Image (cartoon, rainbow, N blue to C red):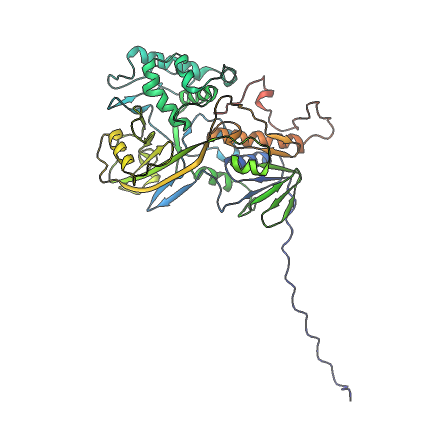
Length: 468
């Protein structure tokens, strides 16, 4: 018999898992959260585009990284910045970046002795004569005057004129720039080797001229709190959720990116901002340069080896170290109180001797005992710096197709300035394609500049941008 009593209430259906709200389709997907990609994101956001940045690792910065070990901040790479880099002011997220300038000039080890070489007084376009506190075999008073005059001419020369010079290698061009031979061999060669991370100076003379121009106009410096502070500052300046960490791109098209987990992310344009090797894998046929291997060695010392934070150069080339810095004398945030950090660079692989050759060489360069120095870390990267041999195109196009762009230090110059500039160029190309004024037909070249976007430097009287 069927019951006529009240029926039990129906059992509620189990709750269904709520799917996360789909992400809105961005205008542009940037692949890589290194300096170039982060700079491109900032410039595109400032022009009204929506942006998503995909980063395969769990942090921003790529090769520009810093570890903290026992209170020491240890950079992975050899990054030296310059206060004269224009992109430090042009990149929205980097304005006001704290920098720690090195003392002027350098301490150069030549013929078994260390010699303090000055630099132009002042930092304007017309430097004064070089100074040195004592007689030096590197430069007589006349040599110093020639050095100051030659660097003064470089400082006052427009980048476009330097880029139009006959191109050769930096090693071949230095004697032709008006420098005394002993100044070239004893000072400028080791200085450029340090700034370019190129021990043989096979780099394009145009790049070398731009680097020396920046050296004459500004101050070599370190970013305060380590190299990672630069990309971290850029990343922090983006809207929350812009960067998707742990997301590796495997395929790209002008309107979509496929990721390692099989997801397909639609968009209106893609900027490939990875390192050169990864960019070549995503963009078959893209030119991938050779590289300079660089090894960075960090030591802790109970006391600073120098009283000033000056660049120490090996002019004799008799040991593994190219250059060294009393890093905590330049930037005190890099070492705990009462300790000193010495950061040294080997242009090549690390010596296979448990660091004995490096320690012995540093004892010569600093003219002090290194017996109490503690080895903190050795970092080597076979692809640390893209090579810039002859011929080197300073303006490789950022726009491959409408909707597909590429940037990175391998597209301009292998410097922080070059990476930031390349990111801006890619952003400007994307803005011209994606934020075009529909009421105005595009020019025959297929490129236009939308209202409200800043003009490119070549639009302003044909002036070439400074790439190094």
